[in-house]
Length: 299
Image (cartoon, rainbow, N blue to C red):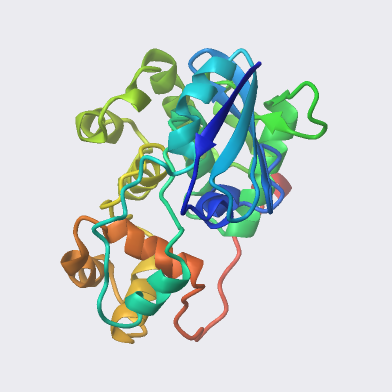
C-alpha cells in the first residue's frame, strides 16, 4: 500500500473526474463528493486508488493498494488533473466565457491506464451508452478481479485473459464479433507494449492507429483520457459535432469537418472546449428518438 498527499488548489475534482464514470454502474469506479475509488490494470498488475478531499481544499489524500500500488501512486497527480495547464485558456466571448467562469476548475486527467481505457472505449464502439454500460458491467464482473478491502470494486479483466478468448466467448456479454475481435487485438497489443502510456502521445499514435479496431474515435478517446491531450479532437462520434456546432454557432447539425472548423480558433485547447460542452450539458434540440442495438445474446 502507498499513500501520499497531492496539491489540488483550484481544481474541481468532482467535475474533473466525472468523465471516468460515463458508464452507469461501472464496477471499476465510484465517485462521490469528496471521494474517488478506482480499480484498474497497471503494468505491475491489478491495483486500486482511493482519493479523498474536502471541497475547496488545497490537498487530496491518495491511497493505493495491490500489485500496482506504487505505479498508481506515482501517477496520481496526473490522474487528478494537476499536469493540465489551463492558464492560457481565456475565452473572451459567450458562451465559452460564461461556461469557463462556471467550470474553471475543470482539468483534463491523464489516467495512463492504457489497457483499461482501450477496453472501456472499445466496448462503447457504435452502440448506445446503456447497452455499453450493461456489457461492460457483465464483462468486468465475470472476468475481472475483485479488490481486497473495497467491497464491490472490481478491476477490469487483464489483457492476457482477454487475449486468450475466442470471439464467441464474448457473445455472452452482448459483444458481437467485430468488437470482440477489436478487444482481443487490443489485448494482444497492450500485452506486448506496456511501456507506451508513459511516452508522448505523438510518438505512440502511429503504433496505436495500426492496431485493428483502434480507429479515429477510439484513438481520440484514449488520447484525451489516457494521455490527457488538451488539444485532441475526437472524430467519428455521432453526436459530438452537432453538440459543438450548437454550442458555438447555434447550428443544429454538423459533421466532423464543421466541428474541426469551429474548434480551430481554440488551439491548443480544443478538447477543453469539448469538455466544457459536456460539463454544461450542451445538447441541440432532439428531433427523433435514438435507436437501440439488438442484443446478440438473444440470437
